[in-house]
Length: 256
Image (cartoon, rainbow, N blue to C red; front, side, top):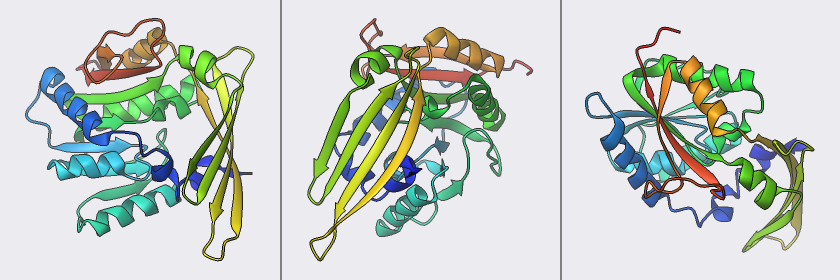
């Protein structure tokens, strides 16, 4: 059984081609405008950047981008797509969200597609948030999203899914914990080869659900203030059936 991130790297973008990164980037820039109390945001860290889709979208818009991810395979794909576009000034860092180092501070940090859900303990959450606060400029923004407890129990649950595209198939088996706060994803990826044969790779990932109060308290402990929670890119207030929260936090002057 391999790390799920690694086996998904070659096919990740094809299996997630419905994600509108341009619209999502519009939302991120709107958050920059609404909630930043500092100078114009220029430097951005894409935490858990994966194959670099959002990194690329924001670089196209003129931001000084750094991408960090735990998967060397994911970063290899991200670096290749930058070079394909003639971009050579994006810094990619291989590292863990709970234990990373940067060369200096940045104006904003983003974490897209439920990267924070992959932190499966409160200690990991606090380690990550502390590093984010450490590497943010005063007044800098941390923008991220979370799959909600409602989604864990109703969409993930113990359901099985199949994702398909030309020449690839991903079988996705979910197993929810008894408490309903963790789910293991057992992944099987089939890829068609040039000779017509198929390869198979198996992997596993895990996510944890957090409540809004738990997130708010963890942010506060680390010197970050939650300033907005939305259910979508239109700043709609979430309700009991919201499946994804979009959260904006700002670095405070609190000593931690």
